Length: 277
Image (tube, rainbow, N blue to C red):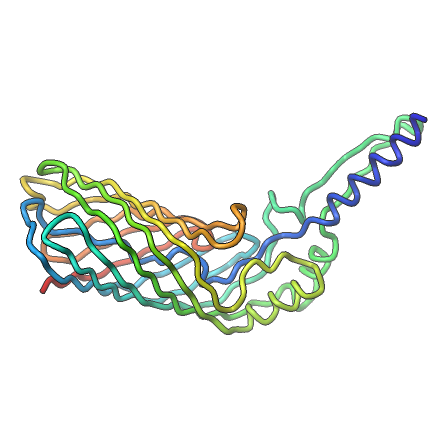
């Protein structure tokens, strides 16, 4: 009876492990690198239109089942501020680059389960997704693939000044993307044969949110402001959601620069200029 229980336990382990596959996303599903911009001074409360243009560089060393990703692109965002804390923002942009397929250390394809056969006093290890790992060792699996994506985002939110020095806000809306590239072709092929979980189609959209907290330097921010922004895109199931954190310094003249880190784009650097009308 004990051997029978062990046999079924091993069988369940094999079924559970081999059924799991690493998840691969469209690069367009990443949170847009464009930050939400803010009023230059805390004492401004008039209705205004702002347009911000920015460029960025993006990198991912080895995470999210991709590696050696390097790319770049740009974004244009327009914000209409009512004569209060409320605003609506629309952004459009795109980026492209190249990357290689990979498998994270904590991904299903590298999950190793070890069990011991007590009768033979020997341990056995089972690998999660051998098919994908074996493909990564082939010539096709080692190649670099190009990608490009367009992205659009609409947000409605509140951007408030707490006194003269603190910025606090939250926004919600939708982010969409479109893409067509060699990376997407191979990603779809691997998904069709069951080697991976192809999380995203070439085109898609999902709810998105952002919230931020910041500080102004000098009275009413005459030396600029620094904000930390947290973005999330809620596409698919909770395990497929992606997020990013953005650290931005903005000067009263409208110039801004910062760093983003998160899913798909593990490190990015951006810079731009905001114009107020």
